[in-house]
Amino acid sequence: MATKTLSDYLYETYQNGQLIDLPLVELIETIANTTIRISQNVRQGALAGLLGSAGSQNIQGETQQTLDIYANQIILSDCESIGVLSGMTSEEMDEFYAISDTLQKGRYLLLFDPLDGSSNIAINSLIGSIFSILVKSDPGNLVTNDDFLQPGNRQIAACYALYGPQTFFALTIGQGVVGFTLDAQTNRFMLTHPAIKIPKSTTEFAINMSNQQHWEEPVKRYIGELLSGQSGVRKKSFNMRWIASMVADVHRILMRGGVFAYPKDSRNPDKAGKLRLLYEANPMAFLIEQAGGLAFDGQYSMLTIQPTSLHQRVAVFLGAQEEIELIMRYHQAI
View 1 (cartoon, rainbow, N blue to C red):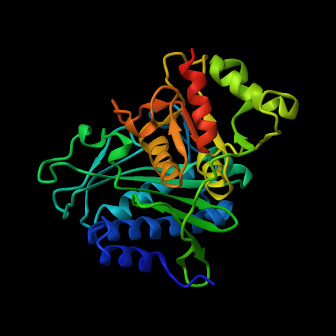
View 2 (cartoon, rainbow, N blue to C red):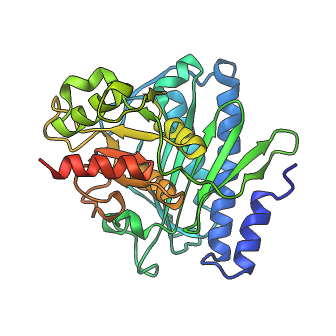
View 3 (cartoon, rainbow, N blue to C red):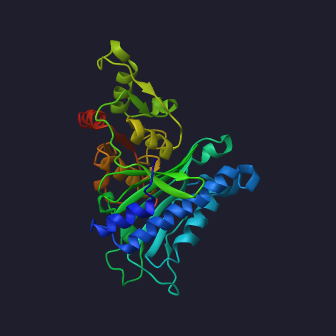
């Protein structure tokens, strides 16, 4: 039976001098507590009056759900006053959010997708929240747009909450990946997965097959080989799983292995991909690589990409090491 809480884990890590300070402990605790509040409202669904479209669009032109805006506001309000942040930015906001001069500030920056998988809300399927934490290089100065444009390998921590049959919280501070399950009776996250590892090989993949005709040739080749089964060049059968929520699909990979892919789409040639580098790809890539997997965008290691804008999009391939290395080789062979 789990006996160690998230707070226990964080403070023990701090006391052991393992690259974590008290402000970061407070920030991660605040994020976790915020996800508990979001989870409670997600579970209420229509009873809380939070379902349906908000009648607005985000900067990417996507229709915002009422829960998107609600989750975004909760995260902002819960995190802005704890005194450890210089600023925040989110998939749902056009610009970054600077901490007011009337409040105490700190050296950390928070980037987040407040509610990933919004299209699943109406059908009561899996959704979650994704977070990335960076350090501001000059905390004494005003926060600027450029402060957030750091490559993923500069992340100090990344985490997500999955709102499913259990509320689950996965975390890395650059020393592997740990997972916590919410105890509904005590409202505390308990350590249930102390060392999450992704197997190097797999027979599962996650991709939206309806977009197949719009993929680049290396992706068509790779998926075609998986679908050919035991009679094909791979000589083994693969199963496809697709939840249409990145946080849910990546969670499955962390739990039992697999590959997640969201390739570039020829219908939008000016866009490098669909998923957001800062709010989705980078934090998930950090978690995946800390669990022994790999992540790249079709050209580069995901965590080495230098961001150029707050809402930059990328193609995403992540998961089991052997499969990602194969996808890399197919792209390099063009």
